[in-house]
Image 1 (tube, rainbow, N blue to C red):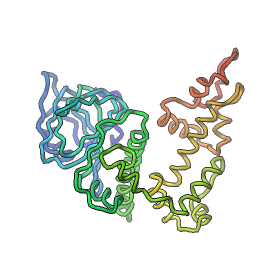
Image 2 (cartoon, rainbow, N blue to C red):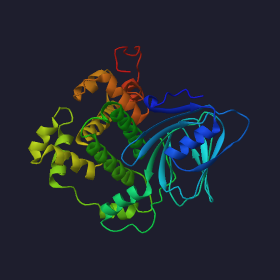
Image 3 (cartoon, rainbow, N blue to C red):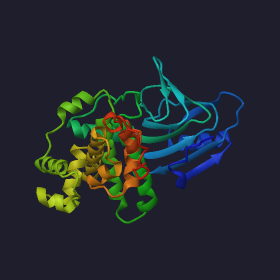
Image 4 (cartoon, helix red, strand yellow):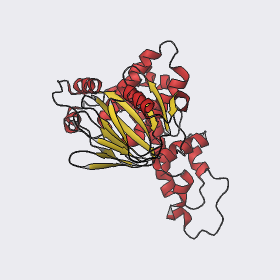
Length: 341
């Protein structure tokens, strides 16, 4: 069974050994399908789910070796992050492995069998086909005549994979805190549009070249705000101050960044700070500490920063520093126990 805790543990749908029960719930939240057990191992299935205006996020572990055969009319895109275990998706012309940390994408109009191991633990974003096609048509400013077919796999440290997992975590956090608050419906709609635009930009598909060629230049206010952030990474700046500086409302600035950069201004600042700290750690001379470098970048929450850094680079800041041969050459002293781990 799972060693990794469920990200959506507050939104459990069922915990069952009943094949009929798990089949019915998966059909409801994901798509109609047939399910077959490979051996006599009894099911020990866990499932959590949250649904928004159009998309759903489902976290699932069957607890047995199973084969899933989606029905032909399943008209949805499934972006699947494998958190634990492994599996395989079998198409008519290839097989795609599900491996821990990677993302597999199944598109409509592509028949596939899905086989998962007993400990396979996935979190899946389900998007109706018409939603993604409408968003693409808006970006291209022309109708979409053929279905969007995504590449089947994105590795663990690709930009799309990191973005998707972080966005899932944000959706889950938002659900826990704000989903039933007044005005949340409008915010959810903006979040969904942001997600669709980002998926279309970060994951390769058969429209990627046309979409890239059709991308508009950055509006002047987005370009100015982006340059200001890049030049002041080590200084804090409030969103309303930044918006005033470039001559637009905070709402316009937020939307412009999400539309053209794929990130909010705050997320863009975080991304650029992470990259700057990473580059500084790789070049730091012997004697410099992680804590000093992080604080010099205007970051005060060291534990939170370390978590973000590990999610992007797969190692801690102190591990990056120790891999820097300029920092570790001829080192005879023990590691600084006060460094950020």
